[in-house]
Image 1: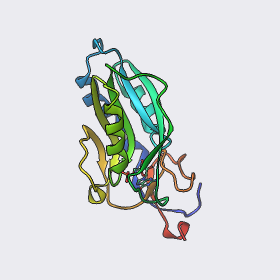
Image 2: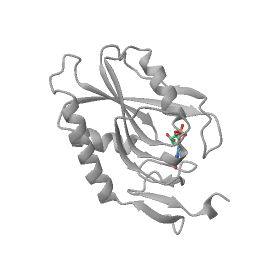
Image 3: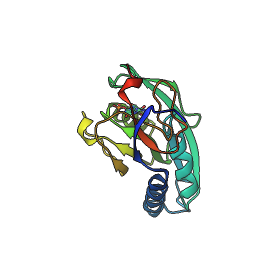
Image 4: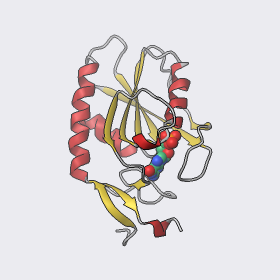
Length: 183
Ligand code: 5GP
């Protein structure tokens, strides 16, 4: 659908679905369905995590509630600086709640590290992270992540929510972009 912009398919739709189910089973075991903290609160980071967030919520066998945040990291379109601005904050107070941040991808880790610090000041009962993708070779800071879908090479990827200049989010798989798209 995007001509030959996609150089290769890194993770297929089927592999994403299987991994989401596996992650959902692990996550459901950590949070009792009738926890005194209330339903597990999924905090999705817009816009990249939308597909993963909704598929994960459907795969979970425990009740969850969903909130979204949008943050923007200063820097170029393909690298992060760690200086983060909140574009859309949570609508609800998370004090006393079990919170699970749902991320699309951890690259340098700087955005997530900032987000974890920010949310932890709001006194959740627990605060953990699930990310679909992580680039271990790009990490520039240590950040605890309870659940990782796939570790991937240090390449720029698109699809399944991830964009380049707002395009390609609608692809059902994760792929790499042909370098001609950047130039
Ligand atoms: P970090 O702060 O970990 O370096 O960057 C995290 C954010 O950068 C992600 O939430 C995502 O928006 C963006 N990002 C990092 N790597 C990629 C990538 O390979 N593809 C796309 N589309 N976005 C990325």
